[in-house]
Image (cartoon, rainbow over all chains, first blue to last red):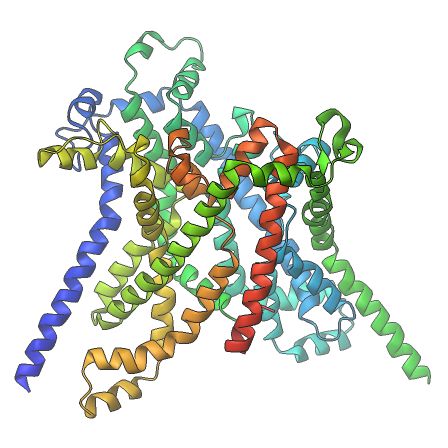
Length: 299
Length: 307
């Protein structure tokens, strides 16, 4: 007996060791970015990226904060489109999902098909781009982040499935009291659906917060960049960093531009742009895990 | 009679009210999803910007012909489908493997820590992942080259070394998705009745035998469904992975260019007719794949079919 027990423990130790090494490969990269943002530019150039900087150097951050206009604007754009976009999106999707959950709704089948078909087939990037940009003139406006992605068939089906699980007797008794469908929706259905609302809203918010693709395709006005797209340009184009620095308001000394710490600056920007979200989202992990189980419910 | 009339009037009112609720979504879908489907006719036109989609002249299958006889056709189709197939196998094997190991961890605290760290990449955009790969791959400052030099090797210019990119892309993609993947399988493992394992233990089955005869058969349905659905998307690649991580470097296209990145470049260079043909080709094949795969899922696991 004791022999078996001992064998067990060693094999569990190996498994834990495996996971500890695996966890390190997930956490170390973040340390690398933090370290790069705090390393002196000359040392970076000479010795390369290090997990721990030889000494802490705040020059990168000083540069970022001497010219925060672009980042603050990107933060404002990202926050607005993410929160307002998520709000509108969840509203429109639940409004559509509620009638689809009602077996006695006459147009349930055709509308469900109309919604579902968009998951199977799409026109492709080119027609979509021409429509949004040339015909609807949504390019270089904030609405491009919000309107085309208003509805996701997948989430509508998740909402519908959840609403179907709510007791229909609630709806019927409210109707006897003379309530309209829209009142039933807002006063009975929505308050009962908080868990699924929270899950879908968080997933949508995360997607929108991380969006850089929309800016890449539709935005040329740098005032309307999202944070992630700003970061993408900084990562890939050194000239863009210089362009940003050249936008410095008058009165700020530009003589330091020649010795701008390009690499350090990139990573300081990355931390400032991504850090807050990385600290916040893991706290909502349980909702994401819940999203998985909700998603696995058959539509 | 009077009562029936009243009910039918009520039912019309109800149906109308419910229809109004769906209207915003219907309008949004019509504009942003259905109009572009009709717009796909541009694939059969010699598109000239000033004339617009409707005004441009038809040119039959010219655009398709041009694409399929170009060298790009084979390259981007091979890359898109090839990576998709590799990702299917790797995600399945790695996801199940990690989930099985997670199931052996008994300490709740440790379990939480492992899961949280594996889920971290789920919260990152590909852009941030791009920063991470850059710290590793940068030719002058990157960690990889530092390690190579430490052991006396020659530094590699990763952003022009085509042969390395299949590996880089596969590892990066696995790193990003394994947390979510394994947690899905882990959730399925948690659903197994513990009594099976206890009974097997009494019969003298060791852990390995229990995995083969209890754990794996129990999560087989999920394995089948996730794999088949991934097959349905075999003609689509993750644009972020293939565009941001290789930094859109032209030399690397033989190993990194997929249909999605090709279509994006077509949009930028203005070859709209040909590019739309590629996009339509992708959509059509994707449609056939999804419908076929769903048909198979419905045969194998009727409860898990999408439709």
